Amino acid sequence: MQDYASLTLLIFLLCVIPSCFELAVAKDGVCSAPESVFAEDSNLRPMYWKVTNPTLAPSHLQDLPGFTRSVYERDHALITPESHVLSPLPEWKNTLGAYLITPAMGSHFVMYIAKMLGNAKSALPPSGVERFVFVVHGAVTLTNGSDDTHNLKVDSYAYLPPNVHHSVESEASATLVVFERRYALEGEYNPELIIGSTDKQNLLETPGEVFQLRKLLPTSMAYDFNIHVMDFQPGEFLNVKEVHYNQHGLLLLEGQGIYRLGNSWYPVQAGDAIWMAPFVPQWYAALGKTRTRYLLYKDVNRNPL
Image: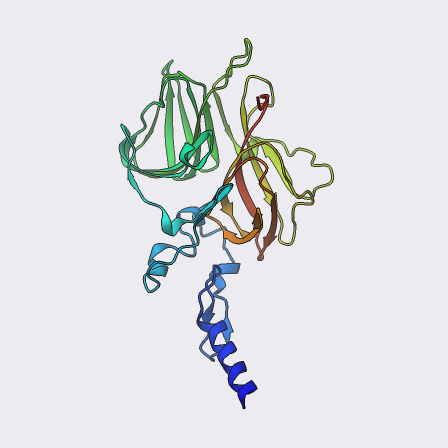
């Protein structure tokens, strides 16, 4: 009788305790996962829609006071959408921002979400600071110092060298992920303004690995960081258990999986952001039925001294 009671309690807990993949109870009383967790109709939903509409949004957590999947440790952080604190971005017009990675953590760069609310306009970064913007929702117009304009839609991006006058404007709502860092001058090299889109970048060889890799910036010495787009099909994982001097800032654009950071293993999904300090052990495996795609900041081309 005691074993039967224990089994009954276990089944009950599995069906009612929330997980990061939002377990639900079906009509027949059997524990099941909602279809929206595993299936996405790309014909009906815009690209990267789950970045701004994550499975575990604040509205899903209203009955779980105090709950968040966000974690901050000495050498890594997982920042999940339900813990974003939005506030007006300094000197931006009609734009709310959530800083996800900053030097207060130990990083040498900043990563933030900028939610442009319509009739919105960016401000310039501080002097000597370079900027990378990537559109995850809506469309924006970039104007540089020579009054050239570029229309950026979802999956488009721009790199702005330090001290280049520019503005990003949006008539309707749009969401950007922005990376900024103080440029590390190296010799006589000068980075150039770059406009592009992920689908225009060639797939690169990844010896010993199965994921697909695109680099959004040139690999030349003029650039002190790069932005990688990495795609994993369900079941694929990193073969190398990475430990290196580079820092990372990551935003999951699509999919779900398991990320190892240090000695911890975190279920993650689209909309989650991760900071990785130098030398933290890191590893990823994709789960579910759709691909994982994430955007990854990596400092490059500079001596760590």
